[in-house]
Amino acid sequence: MFKDIGLPEIILILVIIFIFFGVGKLPQVGEAMGKAIRSFKRSSAGLDEEEETTSKASVKKTTKSKKASS
Image 1 (cartoon, one colour):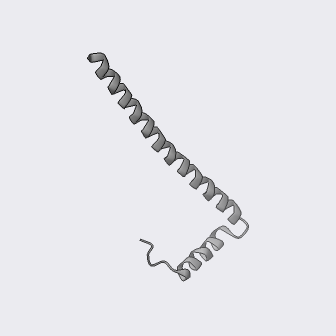
Image 2 (cartoon, helix red, strand yellow):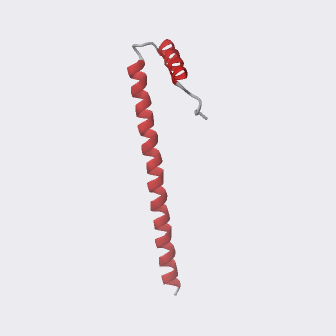
Image 3 (cartoon, helix red, strand yellow):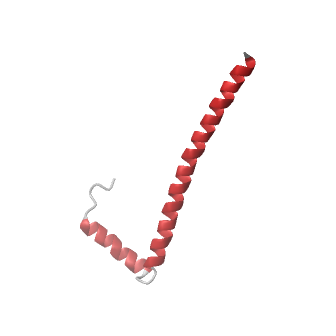
């Protein structure tokens, strides 16, 4: 998707960002983006951990059910 993006395109994007947000707001925008990315990573890692915990619990429950029925 972004295979053809080069230095001129990146410079153009940065110029548009400077015009849109202004130089004074860039640290705030960067901080907000960083927090959003960290939050996304934590939530996606949390979902992975939750899926593992759920699958382990269901395996234990199934094993207990089989032992109880025997």
